[in-house]
Image 1 (cartoon, rainbow, N blue to C red):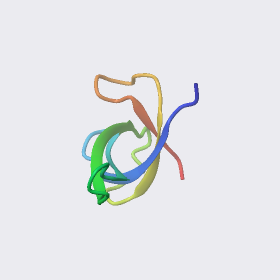
Image 2 (image 1 turned 90 degrees about the horizontal axis):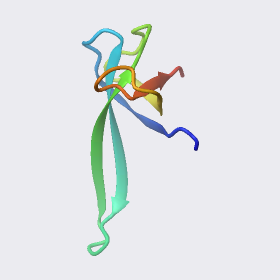
Image 3 (image 1 turned 120 degrees about the vertical axis):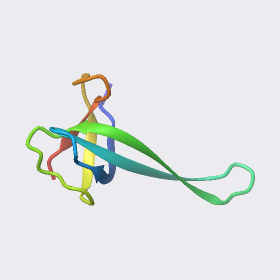
Image 4 (image 1 turned 90 degrees about the vertical axis):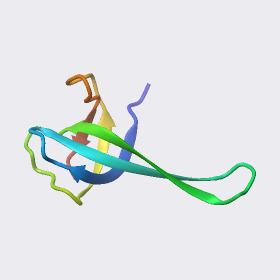
Length: 76
């Protein structure tokens, strides 16, 4: 099974080797047919601390690194 890859924006880089990435998805409401925007935050592993707040990044699924980190940042 291939690993999922998501694209989002870094919202926090306070923790060491960790960034919080906000991923937004858009879809049409099944009844109203209005476009809806939903976002979700993911914790991602950033070993070199190279990404800062506002950077657009891609994250990929990986084995658990810690209690909350199941994603890693792909270098762009």
